[in-house]
Image (cartoon, rainbow, N blue to C red; front, side, top):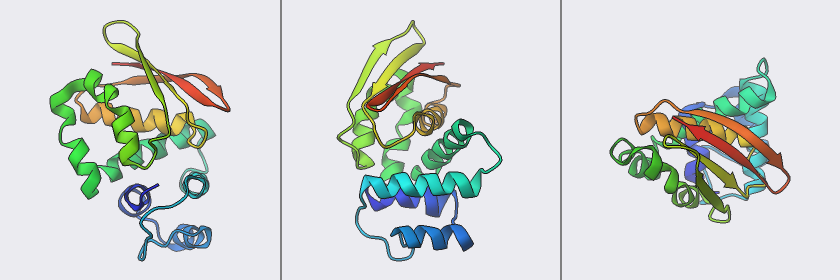
Length: 171
């Protein structure tokens, strides 16, 4: 995972400080002296930590969804994220969803395979072979991405497995 993904969530969106910042450093992420990239397992542990620290009162699914939303908001403020976010209102939801593999590669995850199938005129099903991110984190991120593309999405996690998950995206 590139440092820009960590910057988007922990520096820009969550503005991690105090205990959260200390625990992130103990995991191996130093906000003031970031590495160029990090193992995806560190990302997974850091997001789980943020879930516990930032949203302890929410259900696990809702907490990860909110973190996904905040991640995209923060990532859109990074240099790399701004390049992607600026085009979203112009390309619309279908093309934005078609670009998900490219966006995932920008976030250091070219290993995730994305299968996109139509679900009516205003919907798509996405199957992602992602063993590290929670489907709710991705659902929240896609919700925020589609809001930046000027639509109001509704995303349902239809299937969860050890190999990946399927999301129903409607707008």
